Length: 354
Image (tube, rainbow, N blue to C red):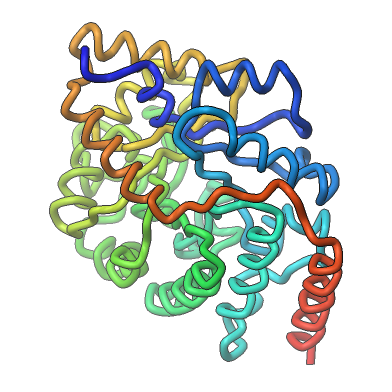
């Protein structure tokens, strides 16, 4: 514990931002928490100038430079439509030659122009009949190879503008159904079909991915006797992701404030369980100041021995490794470049309709 500072624990946190402008209160909070990453929602995108300024000031707050993220993949997950014409979904562009790569390039250019460096996309879940209405609604398709091709093209478009992709939701949302006894969405798909279907996009793309977001659903194929959310499952995070698939990048939780996680675990306990199981970062959308609870839970976990210093050190090493690719935003934006890029968004959408 003596080798780890309080600042280090903040690096394990990906924080959802509520504020849409810089303030003394926000600066004080960020200095206290020093989160490793911050994700913006559509409601925090006020004007292009205000977003660029806010990102620049956040990046200059003392501490390691943060991941500055959106969840942007077009369609119904399109926060950039505040500043650009609406972008089509990956499902819509999948049928057009080179369209997924072009969509990634446009989104990457828009994010870079504003000052972002990370995108919680693409979604690599397979579409399937599920009782979870969110599970397949935005999925690219049902065929794993098709999803891998489209998702990979989109990723490479983002990376041309130095935007880090974070694919989700490992090992796949598509087959999960609500299990009232477990109180979780549960996939009963056996291991062999999971390998042939849901895991195909990850098997194809993991080596190109700097980070992945792990599902909060449970999977009988990996935890048969006790239903564990994947974010708390060493069998999923270590046995499957690290050992079987040989992934060396950054693994982060899906939102600890999702309904079924929140009903069973407080943010402090959920974060300790996730880090112990093998996640490197925990993501909270900041319901009722849960970020402070996460930091306190991690600190108590270290002091009590519930979390080992070696596990935290491993996570910090992976975070630092991915952050080597980050560049600090300028805090300014060219409105001329924004307008020109808006024309490209519109031309791209019109081309898809022809």
